Length: 154
Image 1 (tube, rainbow, N blue to C red):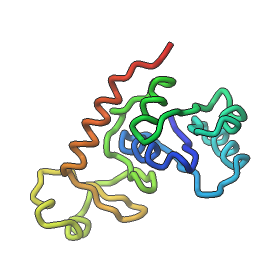
Image 2 (image 1 turned 120 degrees about the horizontal axis):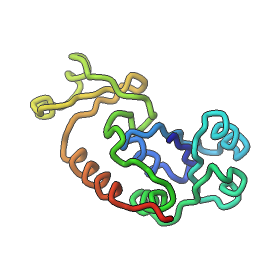
Image 3 (image 1 turned 180 degrees about the horizontal axis):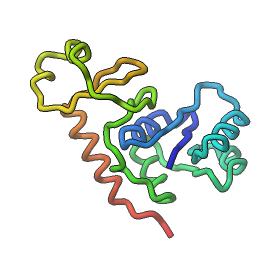
Image 4 (image 1 turned 90 degrees about the vertical axis):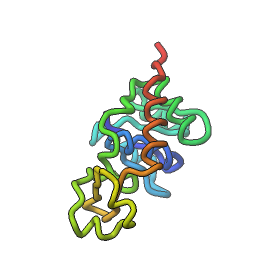
């Protein structure tokens, strides 16, 4: 499942990316018509808080409720069978690019204490961010595990 989140859902988009989902995040001010065209052309589920936009994209749209990434993710999970453990930490949460194995140059850019961790170490080929296992990964993994337990509504 591929997603397109409107610009109001930045944190949800990052959570979906952390789970491994290909998630397009609308740019600020991007027009509804353009979002609808992208969703159709790229076969993406449009995720939004905008009732009018969701109605235009029906049936390939989900209208989310709640405030904050976790509440929005719960709302999405209640409506769709989202796999929150699809491929954890395999995409850049900032620009959606699939991550690659970090090389020696990448590792030189992270704190020395992080290099001592067992890995895996990944890097974004687009923006250059380097990812390593730390307390943030543990907390996010726990959050993804909790989301994976939410049954979709019938």
